[in-house]
Amino acid sequence: MTTAAPTARPEKSAVRQAGSKAFRLIAMPFRLLILLPAMFAGRTLLRKSGAGTQPTITVWEEADNLWQPADPSIELSVIMPFYNPGNALAPTVRRAHESLTEAGVGFEIIAVSDGSTDGSEHSLDGFPAEVKVIVLPANRGKGGAIHAGFARARGSWLGFVDSDGDIDPAHLVEYVSVARRGGYDIVFANKKHAFSESASSPFRKLVSFGFSSIVGTLFSLGVNDTQTGCKLVRRDVMADLLPRMRETRFAFDLELFVAAVTAGHRDLRAQPVRLVERMSGSTVTSTTIIRTLTDALSVLARRHSTDTYRTLPVGAPVAATGKTDLGLAA
Image (cartoon, rainbow, N blue to C red; front, side, top):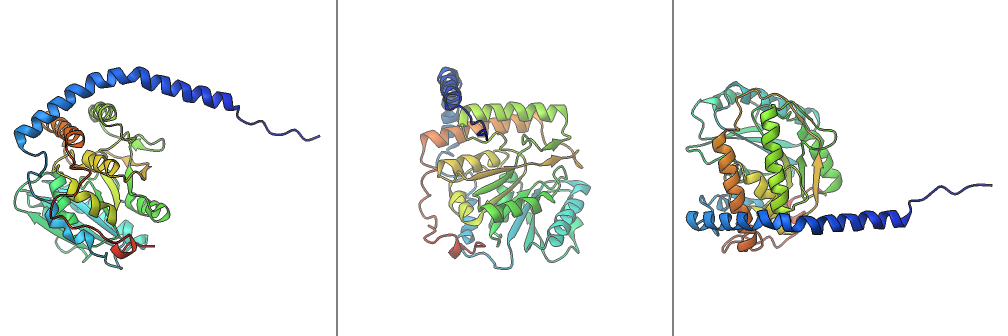
């Protein structure tokens, strides 16, 4: 006599769902205690800066070409922003080039100097034709440099990776493979993934934990790591999101997810990442921490108090066609 395999008891699932609902109800008052003053602070920052509806730098107007078809020979455009990286830049760019070449990916690498003063852009002299260098005359911030790279991007997928060597650019090969199979809106590195490894300092881990906790409480994005510096975005998704985005510094990563989720692009795929010891100095200082937190409050207020992430700015191009017309790989 054959005995049927045991099945999960439906009442257990119901109990778990009820417990989860009860937890959310209990946690809601505590979340509001944090959210309401944060919203007030964010609105105050927007009023003072005048940045509620327009970016400080009109960066998105540079990227109108995102509405144009991708170059059929370029599957992936990789933006690598850098600011005074010293000797870390060339090995990181070389590693990205070698990894993508070996994998047979059609690609371009756009290295963007964010107003660097150490002459590090010259370390890329003589690199293969797939590597292009943009030199911004003044420092915009990481987000502003990425905007400038997007303005020149010709690929079906737009990616960016830190140029300081703490993330192996070979991850781009893994992520583009995942992107091909799933057609996700965004594929992103998540250092909290079960298979991720991190050699970051205890201080950086503490800062990361604190910021992700704040983001989780204030934004409820369903993303527990917004800041790890390696992401891929589908071309049509970025064409839709970039006109909505305002942040030009480290809050750019957070704003990308906020703009995506608010605009309805919720097909987000987290991937494991291996973080190694930085080849250059840490960019995490008390100044950057405070600036990122205040920018995050501005993003929060912009999300709830304006239509910035829901409505395209006046004069922005409107993509009237779908993925195929934008040159995305089928």
